[in-house]
Amino acid sequence: MPFVQRVVEPKYLSRTSLWDEEGKPLVTDDELEAVTNNTLSNALRQLASLVLVANDIFTELGNQLKLINKRSDGLRAKIEAVEGKVAAYDPKKVTVHHRQD
Image (cartoon, rainbow, N blue to C red; front, side):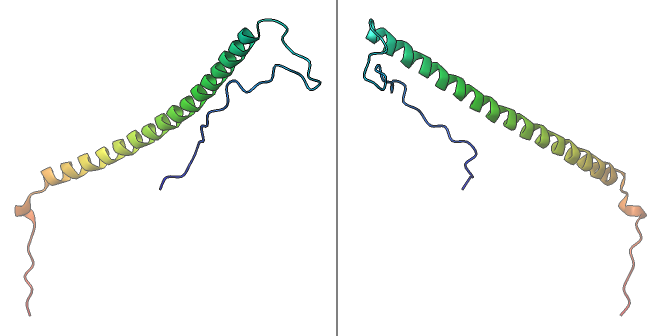
């Protein structure tokens, strides 16, 4: 089971009060427009936050892929070295020792 590295949760977009603590209205006209503007700005904030998380994910993924590429290059070099030794190997030149019991 993978470990949770990032938690992305939606927040309420329109949870705002149009009145202050004393009960006085903060907006005197165009209440619907005020709510709409608040909702849209909160949606933009959430999208910006999501972009930052996505950027972090892709940056980490890129770093992991670079590491895998580096390890693959090392393995490729080792395989080529073994291939060179196998190609240069002549089994006729190897002496076979007989065991005498």
